[in-house]
Amino acid sequence: MLSILRRAPLTGVLLAAIVLVFVLETLAGGSTNQAVLLQLGANRWPLDGAWWRLLASMFLHIGVVHLVVNAWALYQLCGLFEVWLGSARLAVVYFVSGLTGSFASLVFTLEGTQRVSAGASGAIFGVLGALVTFLALRRDRLRPQARSLLFQLLFWAGLNVVLGFSAPGIDNGAHLGGFAAGLVLGAVVAPRRRERPPEPAGLHRPEGHGAAGHGLEERGAGDR
Image 1: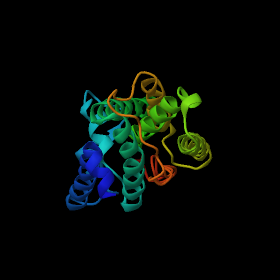
Image 2 (image 1 turned 30 degrees about the horizontal axis):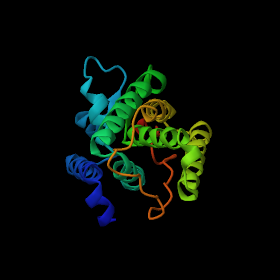
Image 3 (image 1 turned 60 degrees about the vertical axis):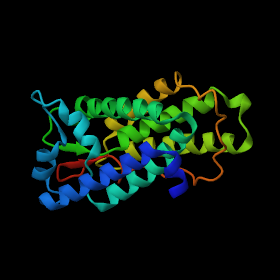
Image 4 (image 1 turned 30 degrees about the vertical axis):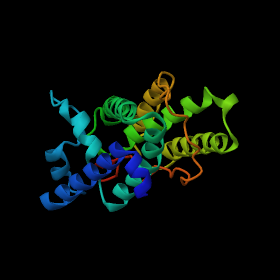
């Protein structure tokens, strides 16, 4: 893990950020407390001009399981992306996808409800989508390990879509919005000329971000 983070510093910063914000949530009254979530920037309808919530909600998590699942997925996917394509491209994909996911959640999930939504998986789904497009466009040149990774990514993307429509309380708006943004961004990013993208054999397969990863809970607080 440390060897990957040394080559992927932005991934390390993002991991540290979501952990530190989770500690702040806990100290402020609890990560499942809806009042605390709203105070710290959870996404809600209507925004009433508080557009900063689209960004702030990307760093909030609801419960320890939610944090752990998203942190593991962030490490796996963002670490791989950053090693291949660099920190600047990861920043663009991560934040554009995350903001797109937050906006999609607002429009397609939260509109007309009293629920709130929070979590990093809109951004993580964007990185997943960018990797899928990046690899798919180069599928004729992929080695067996990278080809296997592409199929794993497609499997996890499909699985999470199915879970999103079959399990209660999942914010599919954020998932699909972030993923769609990532698919588009993956078509325009390119590997750094001075490096050949390494094989992914040293990484575990990416974990899913399903019911615990990005959704809405029955009590009104949603995690994504």
